[in-house]
Length: 261
Image 1 (cartoon, rainbow, N blue to C red):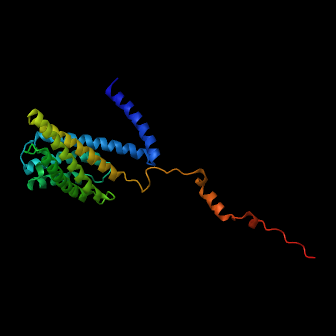
Image 2 (cartoon, helix red, strand yellow; image 1 turned 180 degrees about the vertical axis):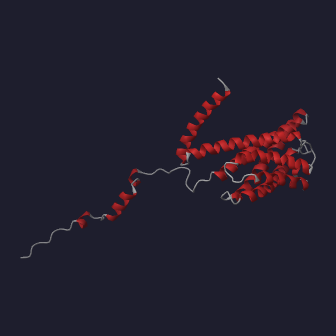
């Protein structure tokens, strides 16, 4: 069995499960499947873009990168994400410009190395705390710049800023903790690269969830329908007719008056 045939079978079964899940949640199945495709493409391409950036940006314990490295790394990431945003934003190319200029500005401010930096301290507690702080700072800055280019096309686009900040905070802290733990065991710097690879994957996955949530917003409705008894399951016409009918049957048919003598 070829890989393409296997992937078609897996996706067909997954689509059936997603359709049932969408019907249970009251969401359009087409939107749910399209959202899954967007998330998978976004997460995969973003992670691969971070990996490809290693051709220009070197991972190290330094606290800064050159503005040229920041621009190149940001351009790769922005280009990968633009590939998935094209069907949903018109035009979508400002996303590339915003991401590229955002990373360039962060490099000039000496915090652009966070995405490719390994902290010098082996203390895991410090790694976690500083990872949350610096990761959240970078994520918020990038989210604010990207918000400028989607605010007129995406409803409630401001939510992208705190979401991206949270995604970066969690991802960088987790990556630095994993890299520090592996380096303490192996005494090899390549462990830090593994930790950053995990961080890039978490950033790609969480930011993808945020994008799907923004682009596939549903009207306000509960995720499930509460149990309704049979007595209350009446059509609007039945309810209106019931409300118009008198409560006392005797009132609808008055008794005939007695004949006068």
